[in-house]
Amino acid sequence: MSPANANTVTAENQQQVFIPPQILRRAPRDYQQIDIYKDINPLDWEDWHWQLKHRIRSKDELSEIIKLTSEEEKGINKASGRLSMAITPYWATLIDPEDPECPLRRQSVPTIAESVIGPHEMTDPCAEDRDSPARHLVHRYPDRVLLLATEHCAMYCRHCTRRRLVGEHSESDSSSKFDAAIEYIKSNRKIRDVLISGGDPLILEDEVLEELLKSLSGISHVEFLRLGTRVPVTLPQRITEKLVNILKKYSPLWISIHFNHPKEITKRCKIACDMLAEAGIPLGSQTVLLKGINDRPYIMKKLMHELIKIRVRPYYIYQCDPVRGTQHFRTPVACGINIMEKLRGYTSGYAVPTYVVDGPGGGGKIPIGPNYILSQAKGKYVLRNYKGKIYTYLE
Image (cartoon, rainbow, N blue to C red; front, side, top):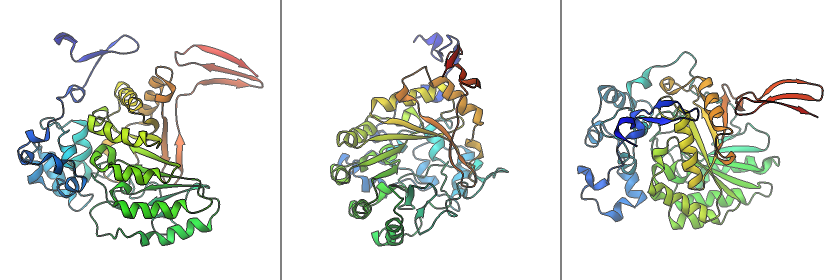
């Protein structure tokens, strides 16, 4: 691309559209280019326990890695009493140190905007606490439950829906804390699917995670397990050979990974996903629609294409939940519908996820998309395709 048009790209309609600076940003830094990490042994850097122990928790430490804005400094000061800041050293190398609009930076560094509470925002927008029949368990849909295995994450995303729960709280990671949840699942034979989330369940030590998987998979009417995680994105070093061998033992087990932007799919992330895929574990993605981060159709299409290349099937795009302090991340629903309009038909079906709104107050996932049915009568449907051409289907 010549310098004259370096900030433009040809869209499907052949019009030139501006690419924001966050897409044309510098490559990730080698960790040894950052002063505070220059003497770190590569073996330590690849140790997930080292990464967790050395997460960035303070304004002073973060200021040695990126140039903080006043809005970020104020946000970090406020975050100590809300959702705390924690950024893995690995993720820190991906952040643009100069650009406050860097999509990876905006997801991980608090800003003062989090202290603004929107008029429709809630502490628990999905009403999970209301639908909890046992500690750590949410039962909303007839045949599946959500088990919240931990309050901890490798990194605390600033748009987190469960910010009321997650953070650096004192919490036992003993598997015995799940006894009531497991007994409830055993007693309800309609439950065939258990989603293990959190926090992030892959933050649990191998032994605790395996004991939980073993207990759940041993329930006769549970047909398969799922793990919801962001660890392959924020802490790919956690995906070790030992962990993969544990997960393989509890097939069928599916993993949903939270990706939000193409810049997250690094060589190191790809290695982690390759290890899981080559172990026969099906991988899907879950993406939150975020203003100024992935709310342009070409950014979302790029993300979906990159996911397919690493054998991760795009699954959901979520409208950002109306949780307190996230108003600055939310887009109009029309933005999500427009993205789906630009995906369906313009790229492979495998690269087209489902766009959903989690019904506020516990309504569950409601799929939303463009309307392709123009009219219907007895035995007759008038339809449009992705190009807007009209077709009649007769039954």
